[in-house]
Image (tube, rainbow, N blue to C red; front, side, top):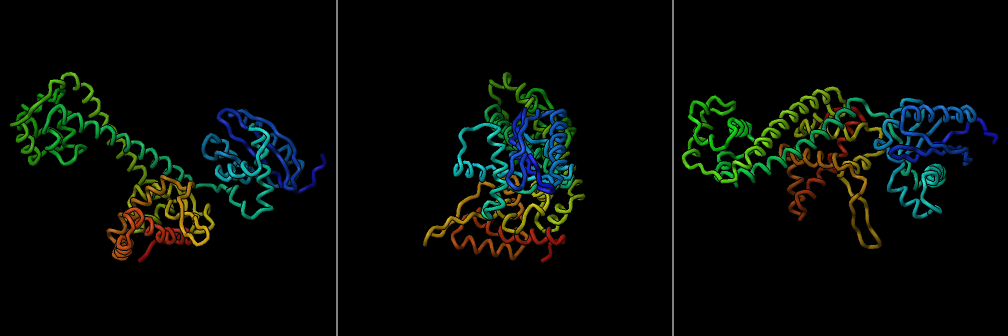
Length: 397
């Protein structure tokens, strides 16, 4: 086939767990061929060798589209970005709609990779299809690390909650009244008190001097413990449950240390992140929430307008109107991690900001629920955040 010089080279990748199917074509619609590669170092090298062979014929720029960016595509997506190739992500939801409108004869990897090439052409001829292929921008290393750290922290916090809830239930069954000596089961002095003896029964006979030697247990808490000892009672199941209870207690303490270590790392990365520093300038936005938002947003260049950012972080709904009926619906493309972080940050911010609190109160008086009022306020703040990040400036009142 004779290839017209300077034609842009289009590459579509159907991503799999162990193998990837690749179709190659030109911007004029010509199909050049397809091949498969393994998800290995050798397979990746083979991919770039073949693409460079096609590129040598066309003498044009290379644009790669893949479904599953940042998922099974790793680390191929990072290797592609390290080249001078343009990388696009195939929007899964829009691809599904496209397949419904233009169904294939069958569902195979080669057919799916060919569909990617069709999307290139569709995007050029149909403006409404421009968001099917979304450009992937290079994310600063710091923000990539923040994303990993904050997601790991979230998992550990969830695990700790499960252990704490289980511990609270078990303690109420094994020693009624023990949980009531503290307002929060995860208080470190209470955990240290429980782990100071291998047998819960011995806690009821610990003398005052021994209690004072327990870390974080001072005079105030010793008095509370001594009052509990007078009426301490234990279940017969304690001998059977003690080893498991000990393991749960140790795991809670271990998780607490791990979370605190992550908090230190998150703060260090935030100091190196431009997005993180800008978000921290908003009074009421905490370190954890800012770390999550900086990690999930990545870079502001991903968003062409502020409404795209608001939709991504869950602060905007999609229009769902028909005729005289006006309404909205939830978007399926919301980043749930960013949404949770934004909801928590906005809720905390409005408590210390008079104008934000007034706006929140106004929405509540209109009949909106708490989360609805927070999202309404978050919609306004997302506009501010977009301007802050675009213009690289701090928040000011």
